[in-house]
Image 1 (cartoon, rainbow, N blue to C red):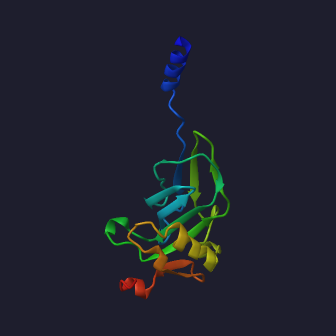
Image 2: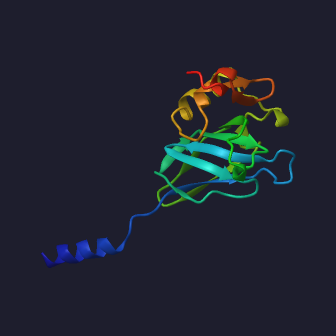
Image 3: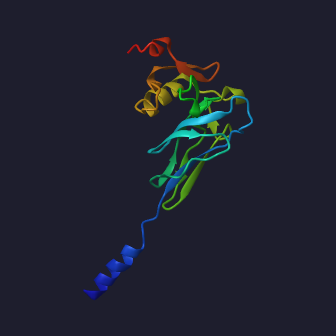
Length: 170
């Protein structure tokens, strides 16, 4: 009985390992219309930015996971302190999955080498990929923008609000 009590006390002193993920915006701050990370999603973790170019988000609690695709919404040239939401977005999907072990911290580097979808680097998403990002991944996120109402232009890799959405139409 005493051994069980000591064992329980010893276990109480060892906190469970913390697993986390951070999003690193590795785009240069000096770039024209430097992209701000507006939203990011990996596994079950949602980051509601902003993450400025050259900076990182705070680590967010996560579950250990095998590789999963990450999704990012960039807001090129957006000033978060201006009060208005961005007028256009660049949608990104990771080129490969990211995983993290128990007690680890995963840093997801957001740039053109790890993500596709930025026409400026000759990296394109299909319409189906863009629709998945706007209509499934971020559809229910309350971030000041109705992502399901965005129109994606594969030629420019930008998503903008449709005129019907601008007018408040359902």
